[in-house]
Image (cartoon, rainbow, N blue to C red; front, side, top):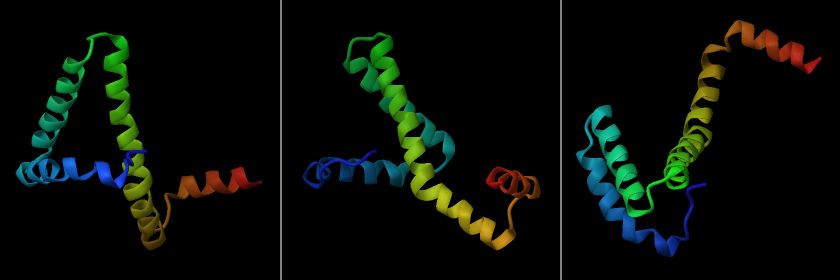
Length: 96
């Protein structure tokens, strides 16, 4: 989870807002994330553990974004448009 204590958040708010304002396209976002990742790796000993830990954090952030933002959106769209038929059938079979 990306949650940190509320008193530790203000130090990041302005820098994040400034970056978010500047990011216009996916390539900008990819560059910023890649640069942050690179800078974090460079701060430590360059080795498998350091690299893996920082890359794993990207996966953790993605999983949390999917859980909090994307999944509820997808559920809403399923209610509006219906589920893919084969998936409905799979779920029905799994329930038996």
